[in-house]
Image (cartoon, rainbow, N blue to C red):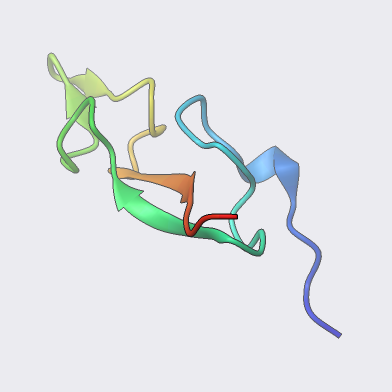
Amino acid sequence: MPAVPDPSNTTPGDEAAPGTPGTGEDVCPRCAGSGRVDDAECPECGGTGIVIHGVGGG
């Protein structure tokens, strides 16, 4: 049985929890993947440099 996505692992830039079907990782547009903005942790990705976005179409 697949793991259930945990919404507590999301950051403000995520469209869904990691592991949600139909989603994938993308480079954070705010920090360009560095995880830092103005010498501080990026508030969009939580310092990971990655955000979760929906993929595909319907």
